[in-house]
Length: 201
Image (cartoon, rainbow, N blue to C red; front, side, top):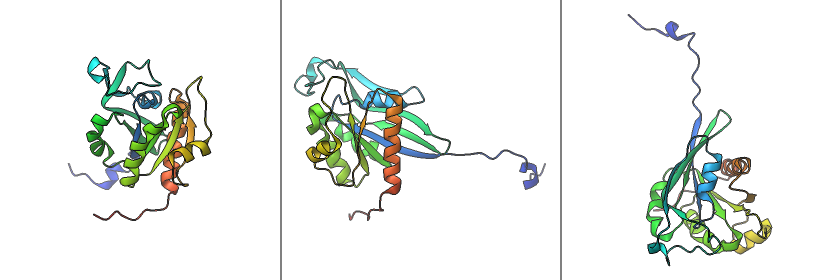
């Protein structure tokens, strides 16, 4: 039987949302897995392993002494922003020995969130350096832990020596609404950011 356009005239229009890849980066134990798990509308994929004795001396648990697991590849989750945008979230491993995975994870990413812990701000520098070198838009999200001093946005910006245009926001990685708002901040920043010239090879 021949098929023509009139056969499809009453078919419902299929709406396909825009898919966007986002990286969640930061130091060891800063809350990347927690953030992905809190906001994901699907069961997140996690590649966590128990911290073992061989990790002693490799994984600095200062400030996160209660941490018992670590991400060894990535975290993955998904969240829809309305019906037009779907964000695919990739949490990066925080330890130096897993940085070889970053180039693969970063491929095709629209932007990144660098999670910061004010108890260990220096752990942000490798992530910030990576995204600056690769011209990847990013924002810094200060994960506010209970019982710890919260520094103002200006203090964090100064300590991290950020470009004036890079947003710094406060968030709670455990809270879905807070995490979702942080993602919205990143998307808005990327959309409103002046187009950057292509990097020379």
